[in-house]
Length: 150
Image 1 (cartoon, rainbow, N blue to C red):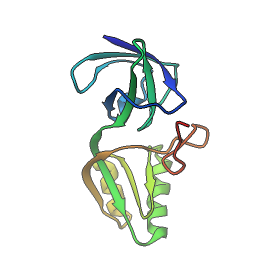
Image 2 (tube, rainbow, N blue to C red):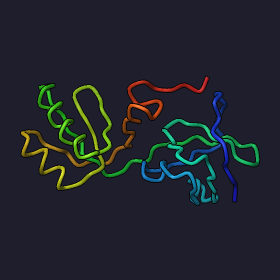
Image 3 (cartoon, rainbow, N blue to C red):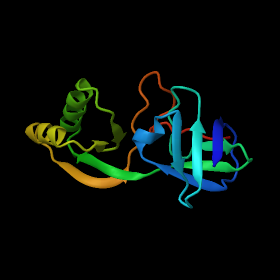
């Protein structure tokens, strides 16, 4: 088993990918596996949230790139920005983690939330996609302001 205890800040070519859904990317202690089946132990600083594209350094010197796995999400699209803003407000009022894009927003699928969105006049489409929610006002980089490994 390889052990990973640190995130790299500089860019390097990756030797392997570690594909994880968002829920597992929020864990600082995790036993998982690379797509090859090789076991990995993450022992990161508490509170670490791994983002798609982050680079990690394994104890054997290999560089491992974090890849956001596709997972079941609900995506809401709207041409009317006010309607989308209203849905974002109500989801945020329920402390739902949101990924925000131009003309759309995404959250981890929940049929109760999908019903609420429908009641607000929009449709939530259930699909498989990577989930990369906003980090929050105090949580570091976000999908709208991508980080670099330079």
